[in-house]
Image (cartoon, rainbow, N blue to C red; front, side, top):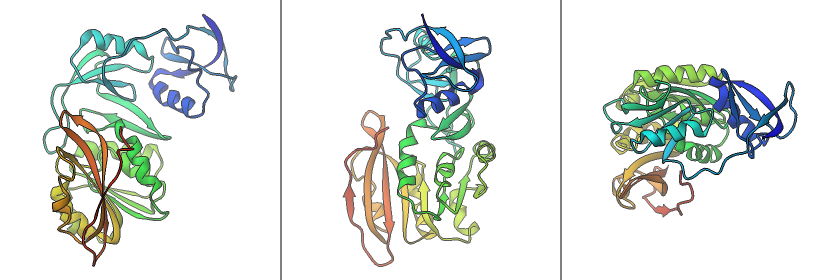
Length: 318
């Protein structure tokens, strides 16, 4: 046991605070946070306001944890493994629930069904990404923390004051991220549960220039009066079907980010090349399943030019 400075955090805020401390370089990585009633004690490398000292265990040598995705305080396992779920639950104090998806993303609302393997019987959590806070319910709306790097990539390539359309916005991760530079973000989704959560997340982050819509993406050209500088199409299982709508709503010279699940490189180049584009940049995002991966086509529109494909090195894998 080692004495170290610590701060006390309510358990429901544990994952948010842990990420904040990591981003600030204040969390002591050599010591294991511990629970104390309804609180989590986080060891920190130097005294902070209100901190005192307490004894902590060093991190034990832990074998490889079962494969999982971490979303706030929820760990989603890739296999149904009850003993592995118990190990995951005890591996980090901020994890309150371990789930296993018993279905693929399905239905018009793009959601999965889950089984609770360990911990609290809930599908709700809070998640922090680059300072933004999100309320998540994975049974109501699909969400992947693995696209965090991709969202930051798009943000870094934006100009200040852009007008952005997010055609399949979910709970708002792209919309809220890109709102840091955009003058207006229109964020649409067909799933009422996703839009309800997105409204909470807009309020939670005090963002005043996102316009949320409950709408089928195919109806957007008849609803929206604007042309957009940038259009995000994060619907990997079907975005390409809505590309004509996206092209119609994007200004000449604007950019469309079209996500797709594909089995071969350049699978959708021919379809995209039917439109007036000046360049198409195809990028690997992450593996999805054996023989299938998540890709994004960064499409630059031009009213007069044909299509040219540029394939990037896979440097944004999540």
